Amino acid sequence: MKFERHAVRSAVIDALGCRELVWAGIRGDDVEPLSDLPQLQASFSIINAYDRRASVQGIAYEELTKRRVDLEVWDIDEQLDAPATRTFRQGLLKALSGPSALLPYRPSRFLSAIVFARRRSCVNLGLFGALQSAFEHKPWVETSVADLGIPVVPWVYLADEEQRDAERLLAAGPVLLRRSRTSGGEGILKVESIEELQKLWPHLPEAFMCVAPFLKGALPINVGATVWGPEAVSVHRPSLQLIGIPELVGRPFGYCGNDFTAVLDLERAHVETIEERVKTIGRWLARHGYLGTFGVDFLLHDGELLFTEINARFQGSTHLSSQLSIEADEPCLMLEHIAASLRLEPTEPPPLYQRMRERVDKSHVVVHWTGTSACAGLAAPVLDRLREVPGYARAEVVAGPDIAVEPGAAVLRATFARSVTTDGYSVAPVIAESVAKVWKENPTC
Image 1 (cartoon, rainbow, N blue to C red):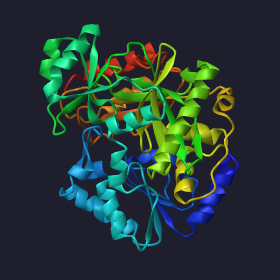
Image 2 (cartoon, rainbow, N blue to C red; image 1 turned 180 degrees about the vertical axis):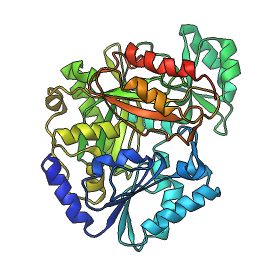
Image 3 (spheres, rainbow, N blue to C red; image 1 turned 90 degrees about the vertical axis):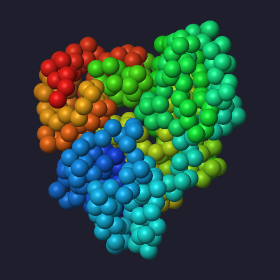
Image 4 (tube, rainbow, N blue to C red; image 1 turned 30 degrees about the vertical axis):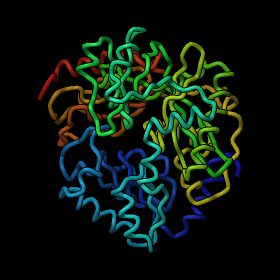
């Protein structure tokens, strides 16, 4: 299929036919790139009820609880008996009672159960939750990727009884400790001394820890792509990922945005290597039953592109990536995911480096609440400050004034028509200062 949005859109509309499309995501606004599909009828999200199209029903879990949770530690699979979950589930069951198709941001036990209960009427446009969960086990994934011949971050897996081996690794400098399953930078610790190692070493059911040297100054690169089948993988524009910026997120390695402009200066050889390796990883995913959109993270360290992880789902970068694709009349990651899930013909994109020669000025930052207690009314003052920043374009995922934002949760996502970082670990001073002023004025509730 041609790498043109209108061609893929027409094919998807024909394939969905009379089925109503229902989005089940963590953020309601993430479904906006699909708003031109006539079948889109409902959005069920954990935070941020979608309200940009009157024809689309928008339901958010947070409206039932009046609390915005930290999505890196909160999981609906652990809240199955909560009254809000039962209400949320009933709404989804009702929305999927007729001819329908469910599009999940990330498959889960909660959603898989609903899909099986609606099997006669609903097509699932995502994986079975338990299958997807396998791709979130980082040691299995990264050792499998290393077996493909792709350089990876040099993780060492140490049993709890072998903690002294980690002490020897510390002799060469700071190390990272990481659990087997993490998300958005949660579950990663930097350790600089034996005392810290002994204090911070987590004791988990798996009874082992992932340990790697801290690669100072490594450039964090994120890429989105789509698996269409055993051989077909389409790769989209990369971005520089924003990580651990203290004004934007409390976690030292917490995700807080993407810059699609800052990567335009990458050497052609690195861009071509990214595309080649993402395709290789996509074909590995396909051999293990994966279909649809996924993400890959790399670190560019001392000229070497190191694989760090696969995100077997949509990502925080997917929304802005999709907006860029729409502006270029290219099929976005979300549209491609639906097409691949419906077994439509793969797209044939031009080489990634060729597409990156066209300059784009797009970034977004995700502002998280860095306080210590839940607080309402945070979004308005942050938004007032950010609107004054040169290049400000729009805000999404904005917490309502009556929603108590829990520590670590997202307050809003702001998009800018400019680059906002040079290294991924800092943000333009005008943005950092704008947010810092609000936090200084609102240290607690």
